[in-house]
Image 1: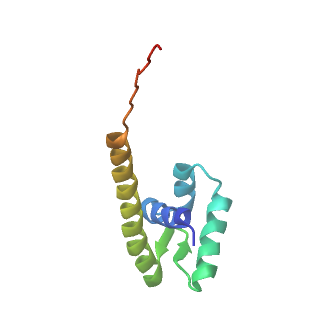
Image 2: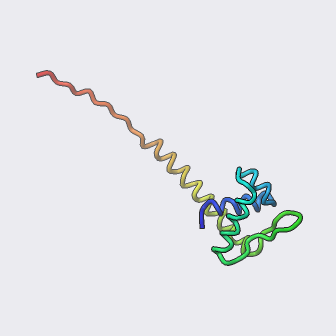
Image 3: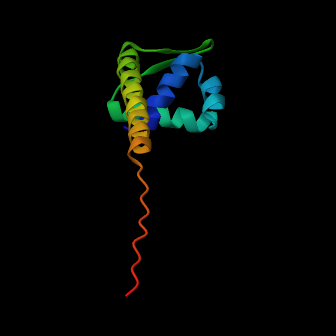
Length: 101
């Protein structure tokens, strides 16, 4: 499972459509569909139900969505915390200790 696949599943659910999610993610619809199919194959269950009025999550898809959303938020928060720490820890020292003998 790739982190990107969790982000894709979240976007599909939030958009209610694979085609709308593909536009927002800047990928081809076929690429997004193949990625989600790969995730479903890896997990051994169907995550989304495709219909004429868009897509909906299966019960297992809802579980993956909920846990995936938590994981994505935690990763985002971790990245922000590390960026903040790296900005705080940057120290530049220049010494000018020349001696003439």
